[in-house]
Image 1 (tube, helix red, strand yellow):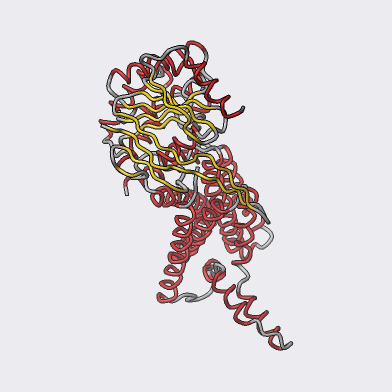
Image 2: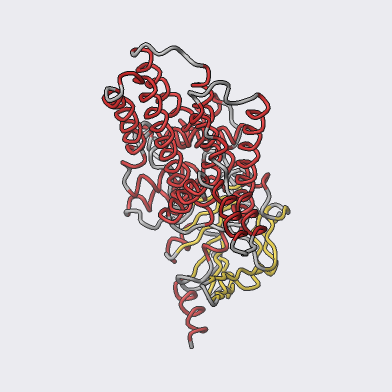
Length: 244
Length: 257
């Protein structure tokens, strides 16, 4: 079963200035299919369209052309958002709230009862090792702790599809290791994961497939199983083809 | 509805944890208390002076607090992108805007309630006899906040910085108190042969008419307001605020993050 599908998905940003407007093509006619239960890594240089794709899938951006589907339902669709967990590259929160309060708040937005919220918040805080900090304000959290609370808000509602934008950026080596373990555990649970990353080796370690995006175009999809050579070489070769 | 109230609740929670909220409240209470000193200048109308200064302070500080909550929280959330973690939940965009708006109004209501209680306390110490129209005045201050908060949310969505949103809102606050002068201006211009009546009328009806809601100015007058007038004043405020908030929803539903 196909979990995520895009058809000619195109996004052009239009920056309007006083007398002129500038168009930037962030994503161009993207056709992509990700099977249910697979981990798909998006690789690309800065500005290749990775974040744009993830934002289009959660409805934070609107496509210029084409469309995207999750479980056959065209996005954006409200009912789909209960089945998706999204981690932005730099997760920002209502900083005056505590870790527990922010998760309770998000839980309310899913319509969970108080009892259900309490159960889920405790469980999620345990998963990201933040139980001790449950009553600390997010404003006092370190960057690594904020990344973990970011992951907690992804897992809170036990989504079927996870969209993770640079999940290891800004983490220390131990944090990277824990994030990798979390992704692998979720993969074991049969979740569909689409993650973007700059780190080729991380993608190689956790993903079933990798897509190489370059200048808004999907240049190649690589199957990890049976890959000859390293993904890094494939990536470098794909990206430099275009440069040459 | 539940989601809207959840967003409103967290708007209040976030606001009361800001230092500026307490600073505004403290300043308001200080000014209300110092009205006692000013009342000494006019011993025969002591309570009148306390009332005038007190209600004026309540209005100004409720306005500052509403502007801070509406612009600071809504624009702040868009600037730091924390809004994206709300909109990626099953929340409709109109629920977000109305939720924020309900939160801002709750803050205003709480502020006005607290400041009015302090003022009433002072007035009772000075032997003031309770006048029902005091409650009416305070209610109309709140109605002004209902309008200005709606506009502040709208400006925080269409402008690019907090300074410009606050400036626009402040500008409208001032203009809204002098809209009646537009009629006079029209009269003067017609005398001089300048016919821009339609233009001036359009501005008159577009701008909020806060003078229309200045019930506190009539507090000392005998029977200043009829039930019908009050009904239309309330209807005007709610209609104006609804239009402003639905415009915000319209702008917000097209925004990308």
